[in-house]
Image (cartoon, rainbow, N blue to C red; front, side, top):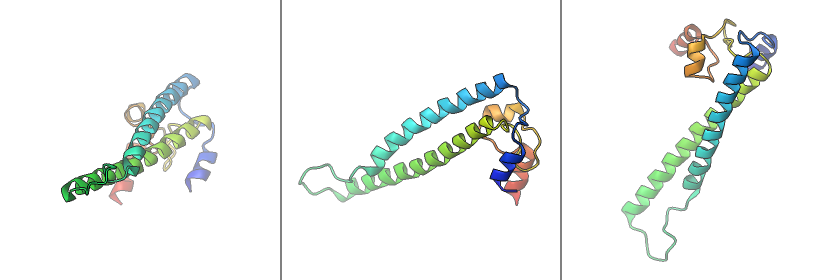
Length: 133
């Protein structure tokens, strides 16, 4: 079952009441804002030209440091984009009232897991099994 059909089949089945879902939504939106701000800063650093803007030739070591910083920023941008997608998907599960259900077995994900990782799509058992495969 793909994630879209899983979402549709579990619509309205969240183990959480409206108040709990809204608490998770607030947490996810706050994190989404943090990651978006971080992504904006990383984008600026990642797109910065590896020169100081002057006509003086850049030292090779300075250039290497700039390139390294740029590569680190690009890697951070990629991780931020992945997290933003996960946050969006979790908010969508809240909207469909399927948040808190494992995308594999369909059982409720423990509250402690969602508090630690609010974007979790799988219960611990299924996630462990999927990672071992």
